Amino acid sequence: MKYIGKKVITLIMTLFLVSVAAFIAFQVIPGDVVTSILGTEATPEREAQLREELGLDRPAPERYLNWVSGVLSGDLGVSYRYSKSMNEMMPVAELIADKLPVTLYLAAYSLILIIVISIPLGVFWARCKNPAPNVLLNILSQGAMAVPSFFLGILITYLFGIVFHCFTPGGYVSYRDDLSGFFGYLLFPAISIAIPKIAMTARFLRNSMLLELSSDYVRTARSKGCTNRRVMYRHVLRNAFMPVITFLGMIIAETIAGSIVIEQVFGLPGVGRLLISSISTRDFPVVEILVLYITAVVIVVYCLVDILYRMIDPRISDK
Image (cartoon, rainbow, N blue to C red):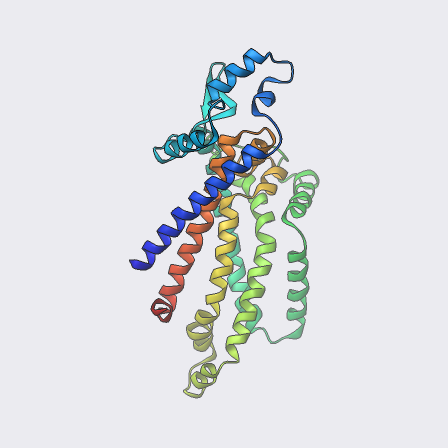
């Protein structure tokens, strides 16, 4: 409990520092929100009215305290660019709630592909003694790691969308309208995200297992009559998986936080795409909340990884 308490305090302090940094950054970067909304031909009176409506006429410390108190009470503010009607601005909470499921579904889809494929592949690669498959896997993994996800997305869009007509590029189907069509469209973005990370995870696991296979405890277990299968799955894989957990934690945090470029390539209305559009239009209330969301995801995932480490290896809990 003491360890979890420390992690919670770290999370709160980090979110506070990130919120301050994000707020300050958006005060000093070039550009004026009011001019961006009204255009350059707006009258000074209309600009002053809009500044008052948005609270931009108040001192920066007061605006920050009002924003933080609103976030803590569940009021994330309103978007400067999106509106529900002509006279009603879109609440940030509603805007993000509409986009977040797309990113989370894509993240879950990608992570399932990564885990289901990379772990068996890494174990097979570590056990493989034949040089031909080893060389082939080495070449394929190097190539997969070298190709960026966005370029894979473009290739997949061209091959499977334009050439083979497996899906319609840009033809996004909402999960509210057709769940099967939604998951069918998400398959190709998920593959684009997963392929480089499958190669990285499989190679990382393979190298870790080869390192463990040369350890003394493996020779001791074999001398006691343990079969190779028992040694591999009961001892080697468990110990080799320790460093892989950290790597998977990084992948999980990155994927859940939002695959920004992939969402742009495939036209997915997720939080990554929302973040890009909000930055370009200086929709600071949306950007600030998304920055906090990404920070929280990274910290929480790393905290869970640390806890999982302690569950797998009880020796760590004493340190």
